[in-house]
Length: 329
Image (cartoon, rainbow, N blue to C red; front, side, top):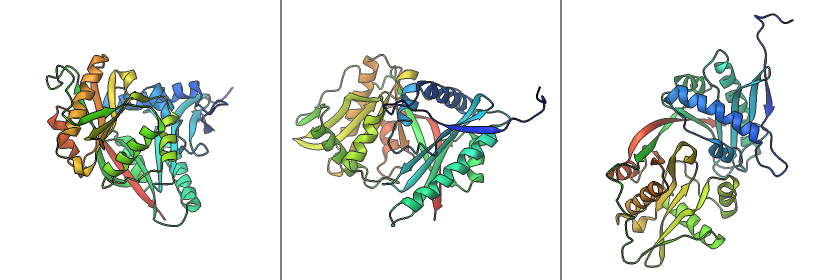
């Protein structure tokens, strides 16, 4: 019989995947439970669900060798996720462990191994611009923030989660009509996907830490999970020219909200109210689906004034996330 005061050593194991490459359902459920517990401790309510976590574990840039579950005996007490973004020359590290006597130990283990992976990624990458390790957490999550900074990452950027309730008087009573010369193309084919990518790359060219993507890598990322909503991929044209995009997904469906994953307008078409039009149509779309509200994420220092835009249509900040980074020589 073991000593009741004995400290059980933490162990790790990889995330399991099925033969067709999908993340194991039990591991997804375990990760969701851990992440939800972290969210509730930091912000008072859940912020994720199985589809969202499943998508995160499915993207092709996830480093499966560096990502793992942390166990105390037979109990999973943490999850560490690492992404190797070769095109952006970034390693993203996310570690989750609910408050408890071993939480800091789990966070330190995940961050240590994540930074080791970042150094491997840097060494394997083609020579060129520098490499950066990145992480982030809710601004209210003091425990994770302390662990991140202890590993040499420093605050780099603030991000907002913004939301509007479907019951808000600023949500139009009916679907806003399209102005003359404006059309929205909805087609789930490669030609349309490539047009959407072109607008995406143009619209975000001046944004913080944005990297233009080639089609194959971009599409592999979007098609990996199950949250993409093909009917909500809107390509807006003006007089036949591709001008803007609004990409909806189902990552917040399990908590009752809709989500605007991408909203972009090419520079020549800005100032015409196209972004507001797309947002208002998204709000009505989600209200008609019975969603309680619509969310999106935004860089708080966005160079195009996106925060003001979202506030002008009735959205407000509901969450604040702090991004951290560390150069990897």
